[in-house]
Image (cartoon, rainbow, N blue to C red; front, top):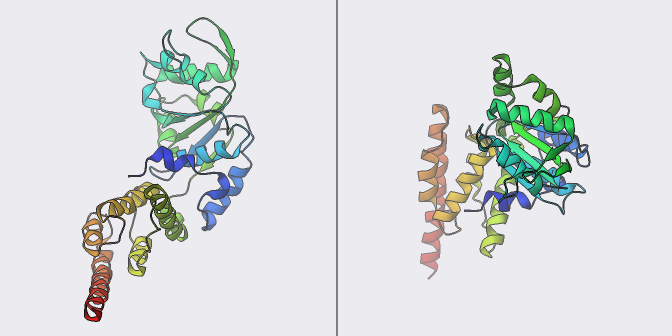
Length: 286
């Protein structure tokens, strides 16, 4: 499998797949964030590529040569938050590790109340005290990812600080779901295949027409991440080729409306038939 970090490290704003109108609008908005040092909030459904967008902004900015450090909100538990953020006597914290670069906190809606308070104070003060007692200026771009619906719900129930939200939402970018950027699917698939070919040092596999048609017509409830995982799994299991039998098995696992089930099997059967015909022709030629 291609590692998520390796995939994300390759991208800048200009290299993101953006053939759809929704992504073109987002890229234009993101371009205005490249050298803005104020906090940034990226919202969207699970699997839409929020972290990828944040990493791409970092890679396009003047901070590109400095660290990009990402941490899940769940790490900032009440007992561990101070050590994780500010460090301990034996280990650097997130703030020191991301100095002069970018610090990304993912799933911000899951932050514990104490961690929310710490981040509020940190943003307000613009400085912090290390575990050794040294005072340091806050010198990094702070970014956050989250689900806007969950954030709104938790704020309405007093589970997420409105003060913190006000501090991190001065700039907000919204990642569209894959259903909103259907025109990007063929290019996203090619992007995964190019990365696969580069890693394996092989030629990029050719995508069968019927397979690509299916990818654009089924539903992907987990968005781009599910699409990527599907294509990578097919490549891994078929040694870099599109094996019709493996495609058939994998499409049976994808959630899609019943109206599409017949279409999926019909198109895949055409792919199998086409593949068998090619094989038979080659055998006859020998």
